[in-house]
Image (cartoon, rainbow, N blue to C red; front, side, top):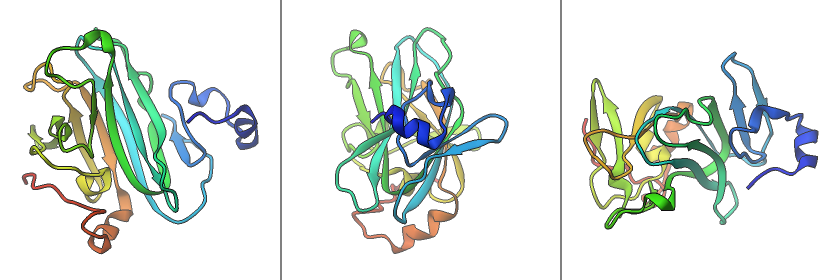
Length: 204
């Protein structure tokens, strides 16, 4: 979902958001520490996500999707693009999403790079594709087990954590790298229902 020009003018948004699409409940924090907030309504959780790099031949996009508090329809909060062949990603700024009840990640590979047996669309809450996700422990990348559906809050846990997404070409070398900070909202996991926070059996 892309904000209308009227909303952008009201919120004082200029060209800061050219690199990725945002909605009124997203904050984009720039390199110099400044931020522009477009407030959302309701009380929910907050998550910060920042793409740190990408590699590989295939062009692809990483999007953050989820639901705002009180809503049942999923929306896209932000998207970061990688053009393939060593190009730079469209944004490496922090994306701060507030007042949400669930957040998921989706990796979309451009259709011209379709290969037999490899999905073009991968989601963190899709048990058939979530094992393409990795998290970093010290200097090693740990793969998410097969058959697990998670939202980003339950996967990230508390504080800052590094993640990577494999696009299916080579599981030894991941392709999309990003950081997730669930911040002080992690205490909510202990109060969440089983359906709302399924913590995967990753190690450690």
